[in-house]
Image (cartoon, rainbow, N blue to C red; front, side, top):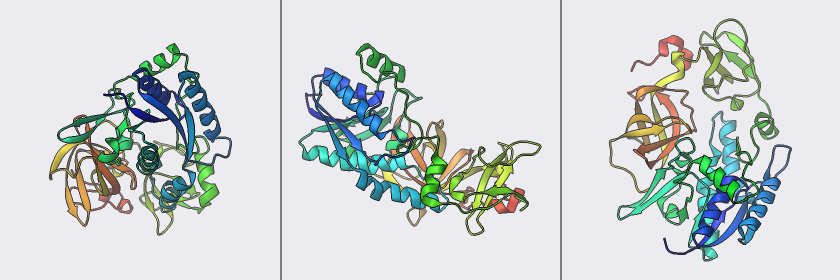
Length: 373
């Protein structure tokens, strides 16, 4: 591509650092910007250290460095929705919403106002541009592919975006960073939710949502223990239930919001953990809505292997996705992301697990609710 004015979102991690380095080596006019999306506090928050590392990287590469503060917008457009959905007992994915609302909207708009021709990030994904329009494709490193988190970014925004790492393996990225003397070449990748980390997530949530104790029950309505709040558990969860005793481990199979009860089943392969279909809505399509019905592949969580799926409209803005094999731990408010080959078409928000006829599962009916495929 021709030499361009590019603003790179420099996060403090090795991925965005190497993305900036590659663009500079290619002769582009590169500027680095650190996005402050959270007013850091607490021992797990790394915002200040991230900012420091990003500044060191920019100095080493020899590019201008600035900081944009989007913390108010992040609170209004990402964090408040995150809290609302958790309080309702769901398990949202704020990283997807952050990409849609902050990185590829607020950040992109600000950069274009500053006469940038493109923005760039360290995502492991690829963009294909041709006469048919924009295509979002998987990164070549299957273990790091991040197209799942980008499905809600519209094609118009992707057309102004670059992913310099899309053709690289993660090991290559670290090797480049070490060879070129970048100060964060061996810095650990971030884990957990971006603004709090992983270790104290429940404590962090309780600061905002408090507790709401209730019973943990089995499908026969026998009380197994107590929970501190349905919002602290997700479908398929094993750890943190505090249920002992003989036999196989216990897993979360459902939530009864009206009775404030967490429903658990015993055994990782219990049939009530599986469903052959789901209903989703709130769709986002990278390059326009596809033709229906659609046969392709889908993921219902990050790092899941592609699952063969058949999708069609279900009325009232909803769609039904029927899988070739039953899916484990379908979680409302998570995203289903749809592919054909290596191309990400888009996706939507999961509302309910169901059978092939679209009948939602009621785990309170116990073994009698086992869905036949």
